[in-house]
Length: 464
Image (cartoon, rainbow, N blue to C red; front, side):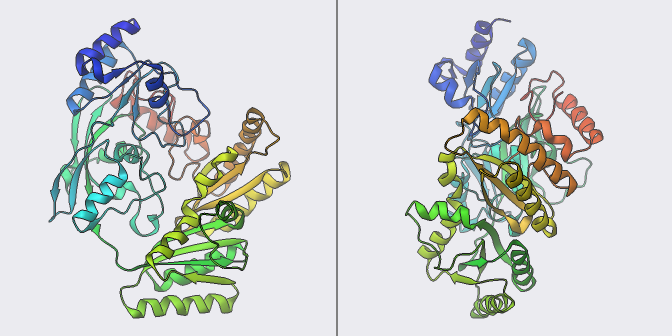
């Protein structure tokens, strides 16, 4: 079928103004935050209803064109890149928030609702949506569901998966399914909702989600502690978790913080330099909570696990302390960093990180390594900065070797090659380091059930 016939069919479904083929639209909506693959979509579509999404998918089956779902395009694994003439289904216009239920603490969101939009809505209702990360101002709920997004509050609140009460989806065959109907308890066979969460649009498209909300945390306090070695961070984590209910436990290296401080927007937390830093957030619901936090701080100092520290005295100071961690990704972007999002069980983090750093430093001593991440749940972000004198192409070629070494270590420690960013195209060649061949065969079989013609995000996660 010709390209003109495809575009004519899409225009018949959506109207001429909701099908874009101009160069700017193809470039903007055909990619995500990754820079490895050049976007080359056939067209960009903007449906407003679930029924229109279903019609697009039915047309794709009939006319045999592929579809790439597109949310906020903040992904880091090329899961939303249309590089092979696909039709992009951008869900930006499906951004309504409705059916708020105070008793159930739920709200229905279109897939195009921005994460921060949901957070603000929850706040207006006196409630809280806890899944939070640096791209909250542009990421969309549908994309968060597609990648099972995590972020900085996972240690207390879990992943996106834990906040999805129900889903409306369109399968790769064009069928509309209402999954779980927002129930807390529903033991009636397979929970198909869970297949679409983290499925990266390879089984179908999420068009609506009922999201759970919770109570707003009160009197949040932030501690930043300077730690002499990675093993000591784990001792600090064990000490605080043993007596307090933490809302976050993050870490970053001195090299990472130095990049942020150098911009001049955020002051250093204290004069003492440490190899690593732990950021701890907790609720102080009473004076007793603050007493426990300070008692634990003194204990960690006495044990030599902490060499200096500061606790927020105001909301402004708490925000600045968070910026030491949250501003890292944006700050290092100018160095074209090689990024890896990996995880192991928390107890294995120190030897795991040290082994990776040893291998990279041995092979590429001129590479600068920046570590940060959600150490409280075992998720590490490895960033290697491109040396100024090294061409981008040569840098990425060397980083491909780094990936193999890193993922061999991931496999050794029984970890994951993608903790929260998804698989997409960038991690697909390495999936076998985390999933067995038998598991991948079952994944391939599930895709064939929901998407028998392989039109949904083909080439992502697995090869059909």
